[in-house]
Length: 75
Image 1: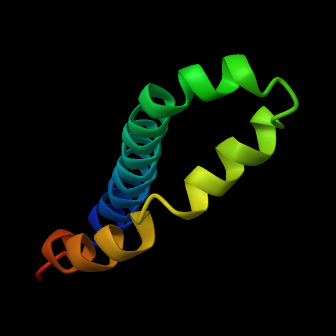
Image 2: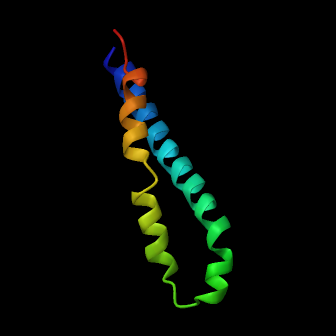
């Protein structure tokens, strides 16, 4: 049984990571559509800091918190 718990934990951890990355990517795509013209006008924008900010503001923490109860192992 411990082997199955360990495997389940590994799959849940991987799934949560993929979910976070998917949410971040969606947020990046949403913002890039609006900011393409702005970037052409403002070349001084720090792209890395903008990406980091979008990762923080993508809402993954709220989504993951609400998804995790459905991924619990029932034994």
